[in-house]
Image 1: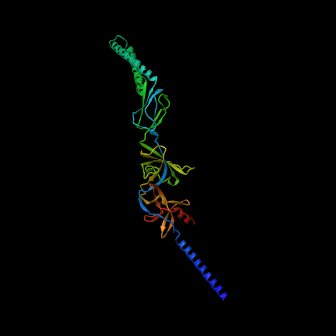
Image 2 (image 1 turned 120 degrees about the vertical axis):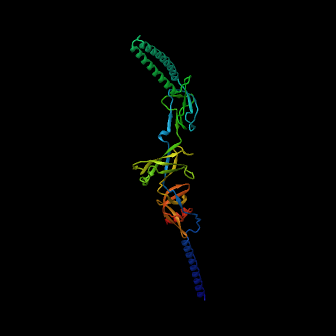
Image 3 (image 1 turned 30 degrees about the vertical axis):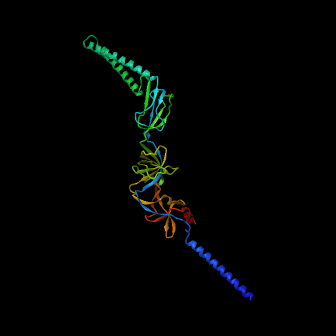
Length: 356
């Protein structure tokens, strides 16, 4: 009797263990069937995009070589007043500073003496010319007087030119003015400080146009050509802030960086200053369409750009080619079709699953 009870107890225990094992296997099977359980994955549908850029590359804003103009003083002296500060916009002809120097006073005196000498020489030349025509004096004396008058006139003209260059006032002051409209990039003098004739106390930048220095990857060396359009975006901007075109592309590849240098011209825009880093989209009018997805949907898997495309109840990684990224959107030119759905969240978890 006792043996029968023990036998029944062992059978019941075995059945219970079997049931538990079956339940665990069923749970594992369910988990394997739905590896995304518990993930809150948001998605976005790929859309056709127009005007696809050939590529986006980093760029540095620079000034054209002719955009910077130095303002110098014709004569050394002392700055009586300084009217501008660095960064201030100025218009052409606007006063920058007043400088007093001793030499302009001397030039003013030289001009007055030269004018007096010219008047005397001219009158003598006219008198001798009259006497020569009457046969009273030799013609040679009249010609010599005329030559002296011309020499005195040249001296007057030169002194007038020097006086006009310096903008001399009666008290020996000169006004330094902006030669172009733009922005004051450098102020190298203070009120009461010295001004010499060799160092530029002011530098004015023409801020109406800029240049871009671009570093193109090797794969774009033969694709980018002068005349192609470019759009410039600032960090954090929703879209392009300026437009321009490619001016030149270097004929050779840098052996160290494996890149090609290019230059582009762009117009002025708020926020653009020389030296700032920007994102530049290069547009080839031959490439008209692409696929747009949120920029956050594109991740690196190994050394490739991928998106996770919904396939049934799962998401599979798919390599894509990114042409440009701007305004929170990535434009793809290979790997995805319009209408396909991609994951935009839980991407680290999806990457981990893909790596298993």
